[in-house]
Image 1 (tube, rainbow, N blue to C red):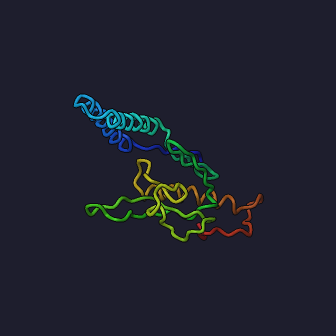
Image 2 (cartoon, rainbow, N blue to C red):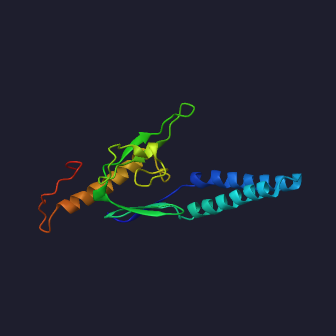
Image 3 (cartoon, one colour):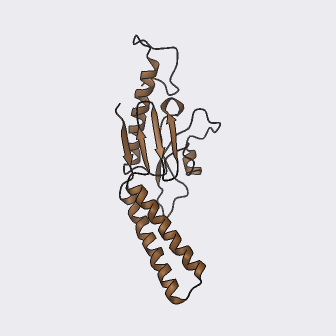
Length: 177
């Protein structure tokens, strides 16, 4: 399958830009009201750092790159590479607890070499990139899970076939596709 790059949509960074601008305005008001220097500096620094992060997300600094061998999850500060043969199937899970009756749906997976048996550990540890995705890259969670499973299935099918087109003795952990 061809390489595909998924980036965060505008909803992922517009709210952050608004919040950061409000922090900078709050810093200006603190300065004009005679608040302490460190409090004003803290608000201003938080606003500037947040704007930088939002700029990096908006310009593609945070993305998910899918290719034939695996996927690369890039965040503003880190990059993690995972091979398709090293992960379980992708599934949609709802976060807990539900806030105001709503739960965010996330795409979760399990590393096959990990000791944790919990398939939906992305819910309990959303900041660990080896367990799931914090956002859905401007896609519905079901569609993202299907896309990832299609790439994974194609990679497992290709790795199971020998040079002559016959299956090897390796067995997919998820069964036949």
